[in-house]
Amino acid sequence: MPKKRANGEGSIRKKPNGRWEGRYTQGIDPVTGRAIQKSVSARTQAECKEKLARAIRDNRGIPINYNEDYTVAEWCRLWFETYSKPVIRPNTAKTYANAIENHIIPALGGIKLKRLTSIQIQQLYNDSRTNGRVQRWENQTNTALTGSSVRRIHMVLSSALKQAVKERLIPYNPCDNCRIPPKEKKEMTILPPEKLGAYLREAEQYGVLPMFFLELSSGLRRGELLALRWDDLDTENRILSVSRQVTRIDGELVATEPKTRNSIRRVALSRQAVELLVREHEQHPDNPLLFPSPRTGGYWSPDAVSRINRKLLAKVGIEEHVRFHDLRHTFATMALSSGVDVKTLSSMLGHYSAGFTLDTYTHITSEMQRGAAEKIGGFMETATAKPEPEPPDPPEGNHCKVIPFERVG
Image (cartoon, rainbow, N blue to C red; front, side, top):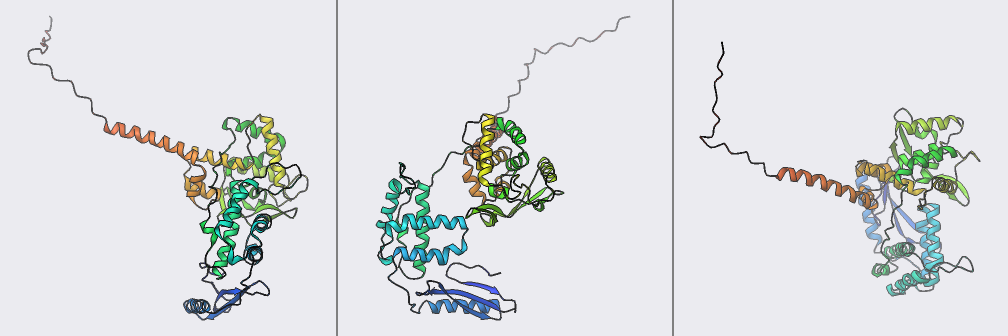
């Protein structure tokens, strides 16, 4: 397994024969457009590191035959095919290609890469906010792009130009001087707690109770839920292993690696959830999937599951727009409100950090902070309260006279 290093430092791995190999990128072949890979070899890891560093340092002084007349269109397409597409997910690649072909190239494609300026890029962002939406039908009236879409275009263009700086095609990244729309904070919608029972009863009537119960008690992403296999469940220890997700690629449903490395995780389940999953598997014991589609026997379509969610909401009379993904938010909200600590919840959700979880569920943690403040306030009030003064002793002369008990008879 190669040892990952910072960008521009190459990579080191131990070969099967016991020797160490260091690889680095020398540049781009102007004919094929592919990265030129070089390597060094050594007997020890330390020696390999030293030789790799020296090779990279020496390479920086060698003039490479770059095509200095790249246009923005040529470079973005070359960067996408060579550096980006091989290492990103298929659906992500479609998003990148859309940004390049439908937004960046129409606005900037003909400009020479070394002549591209920040103000030209800023104009692209500004125009996209008002008139950047691709016209997909004749009567389309909404032409503005959302702030998040403009941020996505910026991310793709900035990444391409950052690589151009590394390859010494341009001296700096003109995207660095541009202003992009701030990150939009959307109001989170969750399933109303008072209607949770009715919602699950409707799910049982529809024949999907185990799936929806698991979602609300684990907070899995939709694709992760649908990719589960029976052997992912440890019934004895009540542990569920999450390592795949279902996605649609070229019209076909396939199981792929999850969203991020942090998404590969183990989630503890309640006894009730495990019992429901065992009964679900008994309905189709020969199918390896935990939730096979009743129509095909294969993976459920993510869109079909979302449609069922909308039907359940309508049956229960929930008017709020609660997406299937909002069931994940519902789980997280219930967990935080029940006292689950943020670090534990972050690992259950597959977030990359507890800080991201805190930022995502600020509305809940703010309420928790107010509750904590009230508890601390009560403690401090008790601690700083002045003790009640003891009543003074009665003055002398006012003592009650004790009459001795006389025995009669």
